[in-house]
Amino acid sequence: MSELGTPLSDEPLRIDWGQGTDGEGMPVDISWWAPTTAAHGGRRNTRVVIASNGYMYTFNSRGSYTGTVSVRESWRSNLGGSEFWPLTRRTLTVGLWLDADRIRPSRTILAMANGMLGVTDRTDSDQRGRSWRVAHACLLLGFSPPLGLDFGDIATAFAEGVGECGDRAARRIKRALLSRLAIERRARRAEAEREVRQRAETIERCWR
Image 1 (cartoon, helix red, strand yellow):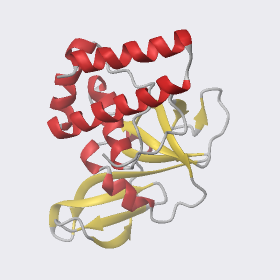
Image 2 (spheres, helix red, strand yellow):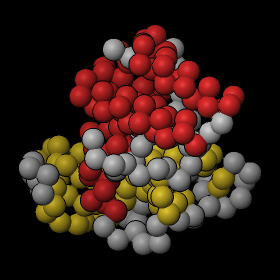
Image 3 (cartoon, rainbow, N blue to C red):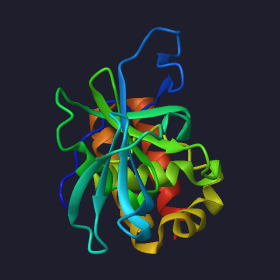
Image 4 (cartoon, rainbow, N blue to C red):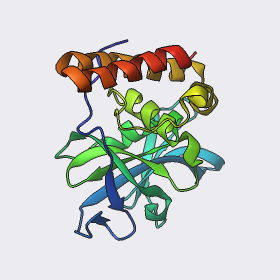
């Protein structure tokens, strides 16, 4: 596995996408790019990315960009819950619709809050698989999954991950988490180091 970047935070920020505020009610500058399908160009299920700037970026069946059109539809209400997982800082939004198309297999949404680029989920997605979808999106963007993701019941988590994003992606997520935990273990001491080691051992034992 190629070297992955470290997320900006291992815990999510709370964003009210509808109001454009953070968990404390303060205004947040937000943008998003949602990969989906739409009726366009004579086809019912054209591959598109709908952006908060009022544009829809279209792709052909081979995944090549074909054009941009303006749209009225707002995807603000489709951004899932209040969890936003920041990965890196970004000053420009140019070309981010291409990154949104890259994470299409994860069925998540690329978003930006106050210059922090990251991932959020869709409101219509099953919450049980949310951590796997976010982890998958992080890998597709070149980042390790945040350690704060909650995969639930550890004994059944891996089977859930395979069902959510496929065997190959689930195993990549497992390897990425173990690699990140190994780095964290070397950086910590005593009790904190034992906690990290125990988590890694549990994943190794249960995620098969």
